[in-house]
Image (cartoon, rainbow, N blue to C red; front, side):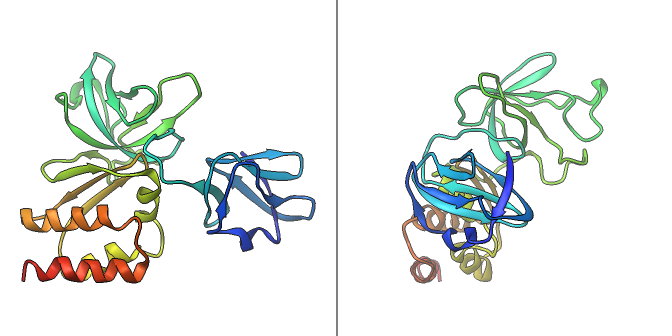
Length: 240
């Protein structure tokens, strides 16, 4: 959904909002177009809130309401962690924590052809992109980016996957890097994949490192930036 940006809209970013709140007034239009994400809707010149949370903004032009919820509502272009449930001749059925299972076409891979269809057993963890997410229909997934390249998408082997709120997932993907990941990255070497559906995968050369990183992330949601750094320091002291 698109609309035009109010000059006063940025003052509301990162503030708590409730259903019914009007967060953007479009009566004073500028030339910049904005995009509305989850939790917001337009009624004439007013942009209002549909769910409680924090009003967020990402460059260049997207606003949404971020809330800490377990339930995931798929949106096109979301990167998510899925679990393969079953395979069929034309697609894989994948659990992405949404209202229904998603379809991953067997050709939705870089250079995908009938001769090189991947083999995913039930339970395989995969990092995928949501291509279509229409109401009342099963979402469609892909293991490529918008240009058709594999990029970071595909099966995630080994490591440890845990679930968290969708709000924490967005925080982990925010820019600049959130304090807990910044503090961990200065001392430890690890891989991480974060899905907007509230799933996080962590992998490292040491099981103890994987556990520390996972615990730190799970404990970080209710802490301030300073508290996250202190918490990481205490966790690291246990392995020194």
